Image (cartoon, rainbow, N blue to C red):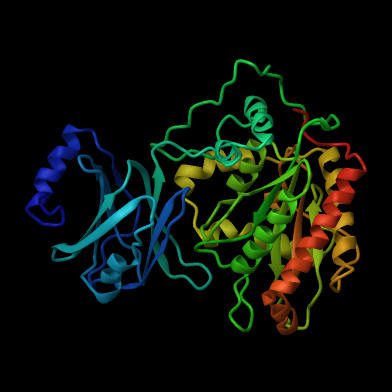
Length: 447
């Protein structure tokens, strides 16, 4: 096969692109600089849902990309760059288990243009965009490789429950999901086929009736941050995204061990999930409860204790709660979201549609979980606080955010690193969940 990185291939590739109506995008960026830019770092985030490749640069550059078929390839031309060690490192960062990228080739296509050719394992819907500097990051060029057909969170659960009596229940949930799209689809991506069963009647979703006790309870667990967004970082280098994923996995295992109860993770590995997608995933699987798990940070290392938050429609209950909500809501900026692709869908998901019933039930389950965590840890506040957390805005699912401890506190950072303490947190949360559902919550989905 001819080398796609070769300059002589440029005209042929362009003609093939036009002839086959392949996609070509031009990114709105600053004019080319007189001096070549520099690649500072290259990072890859492979996951079943999508693979992200990030090139961090010292300046904002112009990039063009298009796809080719037979075999499937993604070609990216970056202007204002010359080959250096960092860009060459990208080749070695692609792992054999990457779901989308088989290999990467890098070449100096023209004196000031680097060409990346990604040999693909399956057809993709690529998203290529730039991000302005924020936090510790400089300019970033982001390559998101989504599957051509979007993944459905509900089908993923069903595929893992083949021998489980919940499979039939989940199939019924698919018929009654209020969210027809599994995630905000990106440009060029198709929605998956609709789950159908002729033996199951289709009923409109209910958001304000008591839950149907004949079906299993489904708890959506949302480990905060991930991928490009590490969350808070402790003095010893502990990353919030790693700690909360570990706690969520432990809690999922405990919940799955309960009779008539199962858990679903909005993020099951180290990758970035936009806030709106987290909400929509929980709605798609028709969760009865949504718990977002985090680890606090504060400007002073002396701050300590666990906290639980619910949504507020009328301002935060304290300045600290307001600051915390803003920090968590900034996750999309840090993690990197393609506003041109996601903005409409995300805006729709994050509409402030939450009902008083949702907030009341969120306060109830929050009180239960806070009480149980207080038996094993110091509490930062002995009541559930409220603020405008974007991730809590599912209008029909009781939703809380648990800040397990202050990772910025050296003593609590040490505790958070302890598997035994992570287990204690998970067991305390499970106890609160069980107490909440045992009291017959007023708001939950009715299948």
